[in-house]
Amino acid sequence: MPEGLVILLPIVSLIALGHLLKRIGIFAIGVWRGVEALVYYLLFPALLFGTLASRPIDLGAGGTMILVGFAFMLAGMLLGLAARPVLSPSPRSFASIFQCSFRFNTYIGMALLGGVFGADGIAAFALLAGFVIPLANVASVWALASHGRQPILHELVRNPFILATFSGLGWSALGLPLPDPALATLLFLGEPALPLGLLATGAALTLLREPRQKKLVAYFVAAKLAAVPAIALGLAALTGLQGEYLVAAVMLAALPPASSAYILATRMGGDGPLVAATVGTATLTAAFTLPLWLMALGL
Image (tube, rainbow, N blue to C red; front, side, top):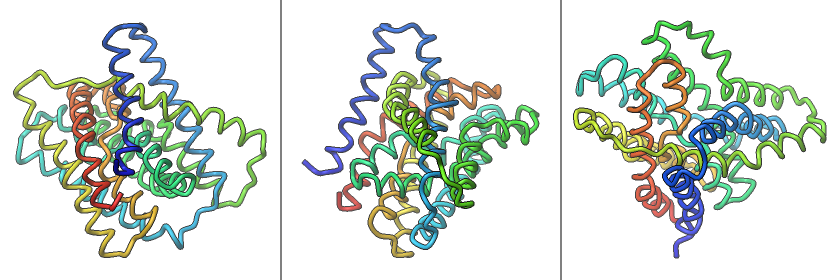
């Protein structure tokens, strides 16, 4: 069996388990909301901060990867903007679904890179994610805040991913030591972030039931899972990326949107069901597209 499939199977299994547990109703709905909030506000920010703050930033080796990341993220945003004149979604629908053309499920990405390259893969993915997550979150919050007429700066300074990312990068750039007890605490908090995040991803899976929105969802799923990774692979080939940096760039581009896109949309008055349906459809589709991109990378 190809190595990529071996690594994907436990990831897909956890997502499927989360969906199954949600469907059979072992836990109350409030439990899943609590898990989502716990991962979003505490566990994953701790993982992000701990990973970035405890590791020196090697911009010499990862700088090209970061530039490629910015390029394909901007390409995804342009593809998202193109949906407005082509498909004419309502302002609320567009503001909500726009983020699905460039946001990515970091839980799946971390698990994938860790399975292929171990700690080096996690470090490469964290470095890239650390730089592009602020860009993704700023664009996502801007679209929703503009629609909802909410103060953009107010939303940005409260976003836990942005706070954790910039804090971790700043801590590392300043060369500040991270005391062992603090690092151990962050590691303890970060360890359950990935499995709980994957379970929560499965629990949030839903399919679109409104025929009038199917074209919109199909467009964004195709843009995120096919067009954006193809652009990333082309840019990586042109710039000579190799090893974990190559895989981190292409895999980040090929990931489905994160369930946090749904959380952000609902918390900012957007169309939560539309985003949930897009994330769910993309996540299910990614079970078939991710192995193809792994094969294209020789894995």
